Image (cartoon, one colour):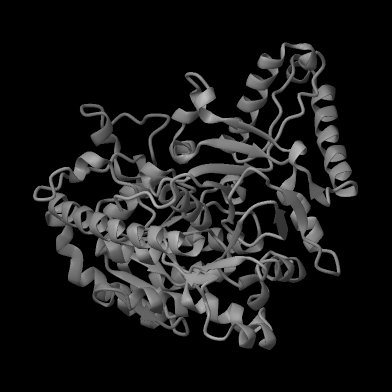
Length: 511
């Protein structure tokens, strides 16, 4: 879009998922949302619960401008780390007892927050700063914080999201009130038990109802139900039609649905933007897309990294078992949890015997230390073709997608399914479960030519599908540069299409 229909609007976006250690699906949505709002002319602000009271001895005696500089740096540092972390003092670095005291202090502070959780936030209790006021700031150059280029400023409401979660666990629905005077709109990137006041528009994003329909999910059903009910007074964005249908059936009561009649102006089903970000120079000439060769350590062996020293083993080199060859691996890119059905996928891969052909299964995602992750590790110990990378950065993720033989997503249920959308936009052969959101993606554009949806009742059927994809596409490795260029060109076209549509939908619901 060339016009700026949201010019002059001051919009606050929640940072809850950007505060997590891993930036997964909803964090990707948050970034796309802010970019669309920014390009539509809005002044975008980020609402975080990170704060710092500068409680260390002597800090509050510093000049006010010095205190502000330290305070702002600590908030940005928390966003960069995905957690709130106070710098270690000299005593804590030198003495074990002091470090223990710090840990106990953290526990006591948490207990204090639980006991005195805020029921409401007044405007004067919120701290804010503009990013343009930060001269030569190091945090705006950190890859994880690349979304700050679309953000005007940060608003800090201490422990806001913790407060909303605690309130959501009460027997009755009692949203946390927050005074947001000075802003036109609040948009949450996931359902929150919150009630904003003194602003014109309130929009909540609803991704799924998974904690209510799948017991193994690790979220309390009462808390999540209250979060969903708090969306009723707001305008609503659904990331898939299946989510909208479930919400209408199980959260909105009959009277609410009938009283609205056919008027659905206060809600919309949107399609998220694809998640991969390619450098602009790759597509400057649409007639001649440039190649993007892999640079990730996962796709480079020691001989490539240090020519002439291939026989010597570097301390930082990747074990040969974990080296992936372009177009000789299937990619599973998601968090490791039961509903993602990765154990089923591991079984299907083992039954396919693709390891004997040199084709591996690459699993990204941080292991959680729970029984499910331990079960996956047990399988991997006996299945050398499965590679666990842990959480990967954006650059490595880009390489893994571009050079994958195929993408796999056997999820039992999804709110949407960004990996499947990414695979379809690239034109990468994608095998996915037949959950409703995956079927919605398969039905878009020409995606049915690239996405195969199968049920997850028989691992042998998936094994056969993997064998078929491998047999049909092994020639991709013979001309890797051409394949990558074709994928990049196709992806960028769909990314522009979906981003423009998302921006249009946002402008419509904010009118």
